[in-house]
Length: 94
Image (cartoon, rainbow, N blue to C red):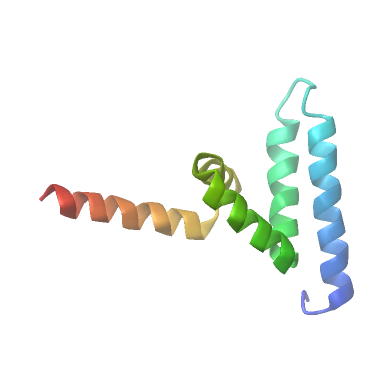
C-alpha cells in the first residue's frame, strides 16, 4: 500500500497536520499533545527519507530528547538499543 507515491505523500501531510494540531492544542488540559504529536511524527518518519535524516541529526545533537521521543513513539529500534546497553552494562559489571 505505501509503495504508491501519492499515498506516501498523503500520509506525510497527515502526519505533519497531526503534529501541528498537537502543538496547537498542547496548552489545553488533557493528553492531546502526547497522543497527536508522536502519531504525527511516526507518520512523517515512516514516509519521508528527509525527515528521517533530520530526526537522526536531532537525536545525535540532543540524545536525551531523542531517547524521550523514541520511548513515546515506542520505536522497536530504541527498545533493541536499550536492551543491548543493559546487556553491555551487565557484562561490564562482571
